[in-house]
Amino acid sequence: MKPLEKWMKKENLGVLLLVGLLLLVIALPVRRNEENTGTEENDAETDQGLPAQDWQTKMENRLIQVLEQVQGVGKAEVFLTCEGTQEKVVEKDETETVYERDSRGNQTPYVSSEIYPKVTGVLVVAQGGDDPVVVQNIQEAVQVLFQVEAHKIKVMKMN
Image 1: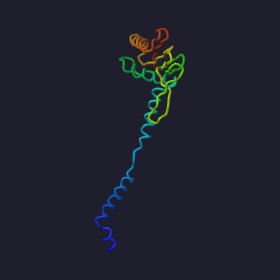
Image 2: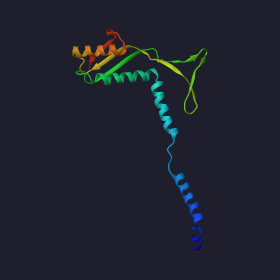
Image 3: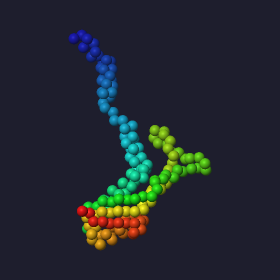
Image 4: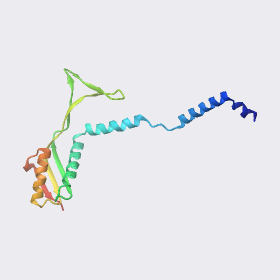
């Protein structure tokens, strides 16, 4: 029992308490900020750096969601044809490219605007594609959304 009494002095109890707290802090799991910023950066890249095919697929899916909410359309499928590719316009100061830094210190060119591909044709296959009123509503919606002429929009009935 003498060794235990030796460690139970006031001076030693403070040291033992501090060592215990230190071990507790070391043992606690730590959530890394790097993992969080990595997923945020990937999300930003997904929204900002979409290749033309991804942008086209995203627009097709969004149009399907909207059309299926319209009365009489029912289930729908959409196919877009596009001209060109997505372009990013990089900001330049006279002859030098302007860069922006992220939280990690990485430099990327500052994108002042993005030009998306031009939609040149739209095919919509819908359950309500045999109703002339529904066809007219679909054509008008596509004309407004994509600035496509009426003769470049085809609406068909789904099986």
